[in-house]
Image 1 (spheres, helix red, strand yellow):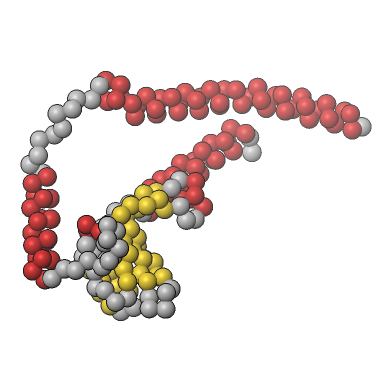
Image 2 (cartoon, rainbow, N blue to C red; image 1 turned 90 degrees about the vertical axis):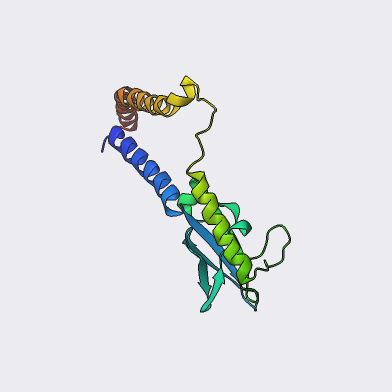
Length: 181
């Protein structure tokens, strides 16, 4: 196996790990549930879910209680941490713990219906908002393409110089073999 193939393989592995880190936790909520005996259970649910099930009981998801935290568990996420939405639930409350007060949220069915309507109206109104008036500069507009071009140039430079490195390693290997005789 030549050094170029090894380098390309390692680059593909790193890019694959970064893609997996981003894809696996996107649009998910990390829910923690504290049982009566102080053990915790963790579960990921879709961002569009209205509830999560722990110990055969439904617990409602309240979007105002969502906090964000770095997810860095596992090898891939240690190298490429990911922001994830988090919620905490307790065994004796149907609603999540409010991060501002530390107490469970108290919501009646009437308030819940009003919240659903408010969320619906906000999401509906978001579609009619005009785009941001802030104009992007030319550099900001083409920055992703510039970054891809620089990575391609770096890869080409490394690829062309690998032959010189390979020749130097052959010379060093021959010298070591001649000394060892």
